Structure formats: C-alpha cells, structure tokens
Length: 401
Image 1 (cartoon, rainbow, N blue to C red):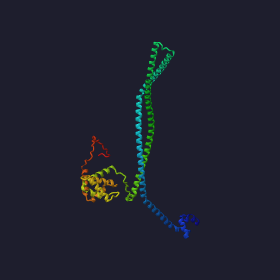
Image 2: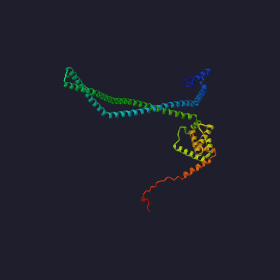
Image 3: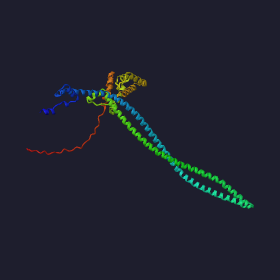
Image 4: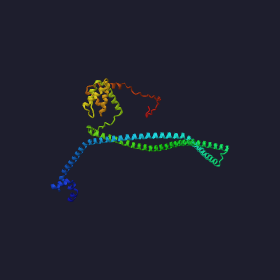
C-alpha cells in the first residue's frame, strides 16, 4: 500500500523547478501536499503577470497599427504612382500601335496604287534600254563605215563626198539621241528606286508594328499586375483602419459586452437610411433660418474639432453665401456630415433641443404625420367568382319517427 502511494500519489516531481527548490530549501520533500497552495498562488501570479504583459502590449497595438497605416499609405501612394505611370505607358504604346497600323495601311494603299505605274515604268525602261542598245550598235557600224571610207579614199568623187557627209550627219544624230535616252533611263530608275524605297519603308513599319504590339502586351500585363497590387494594398489599408478604429474607439468594449453591432466609419449606410437622413437635413436647413450658426456650434464632431476651427468654418460659409440663409444652413450641415464620421439623425435632434428649437422637430413630425395620413391605401383587385348552386344533401338519420 505504501509502495502504491509512493508511485501513484502526489510527489515533488509533479511540481515545477521553482517549487522543487522551495521544497528542498524548506526540507518538505516528504510532504508535497504543503506545496499545493503555494504552487497555485505561484501559477496565478504568473498568469496575472502574463495578462498584464498582454494588456501592456495591446495598449501599444494601436500605435503600431498607426505606424503600419502610415507605411501602408506611403506604399499605396508609390504603387498608385507606378500604376498611373504604367497605364500611361500602355496608353502611349497603344497610340503608337494605332499610328503604325495607320502608316502601314497608308503604305499598303500607296503601293497598290503604284503597282500599275511600276509595271509601266519597267516596260518603258526595257524599251528604252533596247533603243539605247540599237543606237549604240548603229553608232558603231556608222563609225566603222566612216573610218573605212577614209582609209579606202573614196572621198575623191562627188558621190563619195555626199555619202560621207550623210554618214557624219547620221552619226551626229545618233550621238545626240544617246544622252536623252540615258537621261530617261536614269529618271525611270530613280522612280523605281523610290517605289522600292516605299516598299522597304513599309517593311520597316511592319517590323516596328510587331515590336510595338509586343511592348503593348507587356505594358498591359504590367499595368494589370500593378492594378491588382494596388487593390490589394487598398484592401489591407482599409482593414488596418477598421482595426485601428475598433481599437481606439471607447465604445468598442461596451458594444462587444452588450452584443451590439459594430459599425466602422468606412461602412456605408443603406440607401434608404441615407435618403431619409438627407431629407431630414434639407428640411432642418429650410426651417433653421438664422440659427444655423448656433446649431453648427452645438453639433458634435468626431474626430473632435476645436472652437477656432468651427468659428473659421462659420466665417467661411457666411462670406461665401452672404445673402442666402437657407444655402448657408445647407452648407453648414453638409460640412458637418463631411467632418463628422458618425453623423446621424439623433445627433441633429439633440443639437436642435440643445439650442431650444424643438419647434422644428414638432413641425417636421406633424408634416410627416400629415404625409402618412394622406397616402391613399393600396388598391386591391376584386375577383368575382361564379356562384355555385347549393347542393341538397340528403341527411341520413338513424332513427325515423
């Protein structure tokens, strides 16, 4: 029994190192039951210290979040600038592709128009080269005859002299025809060279077009990647701001404790609630008249705005809309809704009660009741069913008298 108690019972080895040292120091190794309360207090103290460390770390979490938000905003600005540059580059590449396509189409149309002319130029050049060849052959033959007549001495009689002079005149005429034919051939070659230059120009434009299309695809791909990264950073920034808001607002714990819905300032209200609030603000602006400045001073702001800032807002609205009190009140409520991230109808009602303008609320409530009472009920369609003749049922009785 003693052996079983020593094996299965509570021993000093079941405690941590600090409790073992305490047992050795107090010489209570054989009575570990005396360490139970001490160990429980020690564990509770460690748990409280851990909770205190967690609370201290959590108190600085909002500050760390603010640093992260600042850094994320910088990254977002850099990414937005990069995204904008990439979109601009993609637009420029798209414009370059369109311009090159237009140039290639123009060159193609021009070459199609010049194709018949090029065939005519080649045909004419071939004919001129044949003529030039014939002229050169005739010139060689006549010069040879002239030289032969001079060698043989056939210039003694009158007939030989006439034939010699006629041969000279033909040689001179052939020499005069030769430069004109050569100039015409050179002109035709220059025109054909210009047409072939247009064809090479088209080939260059087509090569540039292919490269521009590749650049456009690459720039669009990079722009899409940058846009996706920007959207991811915006989502992360919105989540960080929402967490920071829940961490810094004094009402978060209260809402969590009472199981109330948590609303961030980035959460947009429904369209129906927004329309009701807009209508309420417009009616208040129409009824408040000259008390809009008092109302603007009584309205709450979150984040808090100082009295000097509120006074500068009132001066700005008064100077910009000098003779129209309705517009001044409308601008004041619009500015309040822009600067107060938690603007609601309750805040506006409380401010009206604070400046003792309950008459506006009563009037608006009466008008609302009149509007609801004058609304005609919904028309229902009446359906007439045909009448069915009552069938005479024969009652069966068990007793007949």
